[in-house]
Length: 338
Image 1 (cartoon, rainbow, N blue to C red):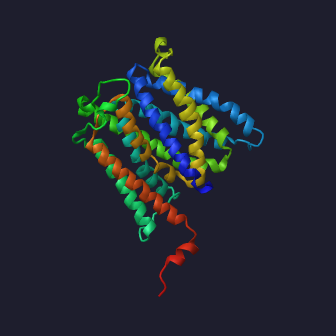
Image 2: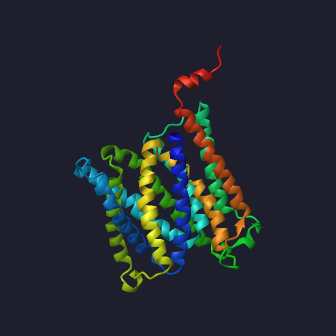
Image 3: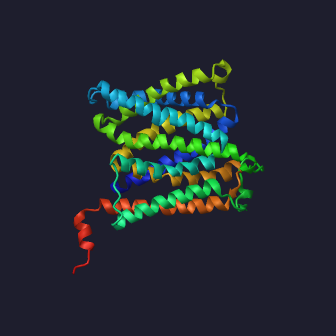
């Protein structure tokens, strides 16, 4: 069971993210300002994490050097603050399903960033390397299919919608707005992929994961506050009522940022950034069916085909990574004798 723990953790992470796409989109549709949303989310995550960081790691944490602090500051700025702000704008322009779909470009982005920084390797003359390459191509093809090909609508789940008899179709969204949203999502995922790769280096300099995560959330909350104040100064926009906005902020702050960022740091430490990135197709599959059942979105043939390609890519890369991590002695035993 111990060896399967990272697989269970990444499934939990992607389920949490699928719910985040749905709740965030609902909050934005109800008038929540994206930049204010990011600030509240990060501030709440910081408040939630501080007691745990003090209780479990404060006494054993090594001194934090100024150089490491600067690394964490810029890691928070680009990988969390700007990534979340840009992602929120892209979500406003598009839909939860597309947000989850474009997130599946993350494995491609993370893989190439990891190659450049020599965190990951690709040996195309081995079966493991070929499997990883096929998986990356399949993920890219699946994400492209979801973004650019809709196809005929499938109405198999139309009578199972909860809470409403009304279905929603995003076909009325202008092409320019849709493409702009795709571009912003891609930019956000590029920043997030860089965050995952660089975090693998920074965590070696400062290993206490709870304090590391808390410090990133704290710095991100300050950064996002400055950005939000510069863009939105209407005090009415900052008020939270007992509605979907408050629920979305609480969920994203405590569960997504507070809990998931810690889990992601744990997975990166155990399995590396590309392993985490390759789990992103799971969030898409969950989001597609949740959008159909809860929001009444109409699922298309493109969503099914794209989801299938993403699953193929996911398991292809995971197979390649597992084979590379197999002890060399075991691999030698598999070679036929001459």
